[in-house]
Length: 412
Image (cartoon, rainbow, N blue to C red; front, top):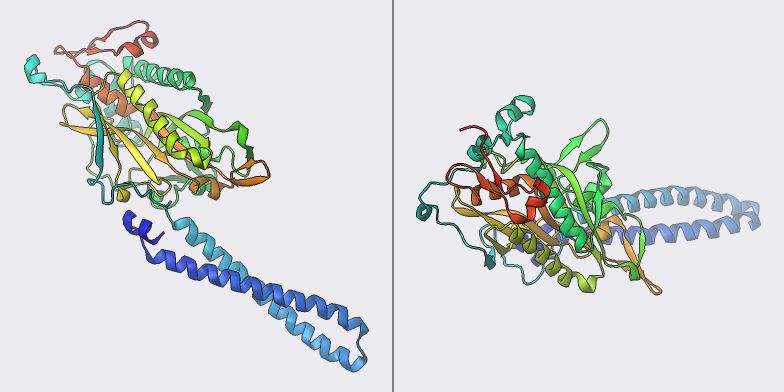
């Protein structure tokens, strides 16, 4: 665990603080049990004692009562401290994860061909200019109504979102996922149990009056769906595809991706989520990645797959693969999907277990983005644009857009 914390760039001393608190928890628990046993034994002696003995025993009983109360308080305090420190620890980093910060990822594979717009004789427009030509994106009125990093999808923009969501859900359903529409508001234990009140807490919206949190991903609701349950081993794997609005404060992103809809406070997303036996977790991780690659390939987008470095993992992930699509006007790959192997980290915190014969044990959870809508729209508009500002529709989306093959500008 110390090595894992070090690889994450997190506080290594936290491990020693946890061990110390756990030692106090166990020793105070032993002392409480010993004092309670003595108290019970004394209770049996008092009725049989002589008058002289009884006075002494009653005096001892009074002292024991105070000692038991103090030991109970000490045990509860140590238990609470242990629990609080435990929740601050991230998952154990998988040994194959590259160590380092955000830029220390390893590229595993690349797919598709990056277009040479110069050879085609025109300069590519960015997604916002295209979106305005198509009457698809309105960020000015989004800012007027809600503030920066909000937007309206209008006309074909709204239809394109619905097409993406329906196509993604169709792929997920065909792969055996159960479609789910999930709550956007969750209780604190759901958010904490999935690991989003640790290092990610600054990005979370909290409704103080109701003590509820707006989810940044339907992963939270899908993970907590089986909270405090024991599942049957023969029911695994359980796979859910959740659709929900997602809300992120984007704290710390001041000045980053301020143009358009790449980095926003509210967006819709289709998320894959799996419950599996811990022995199958790495194989399931590869399956989730394969479904993401299938999706991006069907959208005819050039992309690469990276093995995310240890310092860029979320607290719940032991390992994470990102699929990054090429964004022509930025001249670089940007994250579109991500899949994380959370091993037993979330299930332990949410008390989700599996019964295998007579054995009851934690199971493993994994998640994977299938379609984060705004970024996918960005990638589609920029990669499939034509010289006149129109945009070719990938074949997989055409049935969901009334057979439309090209999105035509409404303003020039």
